[in-house]
Image (tube, rainbow, N blue to C red; front, side, top):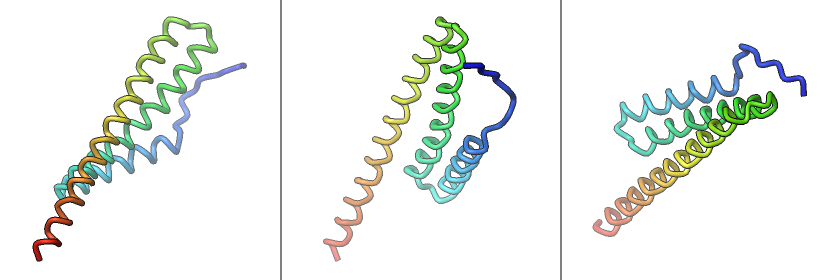
Length: 106
């Protein structure tokens, strides 16, 4: 495959990290828990991209032990993203119930 790992930054990954940090910072100022978690989810997606690339390189270079560790870590990161998505959904459902109960009182 002729892989040559380098030190080039992936613009997409850098932008996702900046976006996640901006979302989290704004959400902290607004005390918005679901947006804080959403910002963290953006950052975790970058971790997944990085571990996926590292896994591919290790696998192609015949580093089976390293590739196995990276695959396990990648799977853990994916589970974390899934958990964050469930938490965000839970916050949104709770907010919706709060809004509905407020509307029915008036």
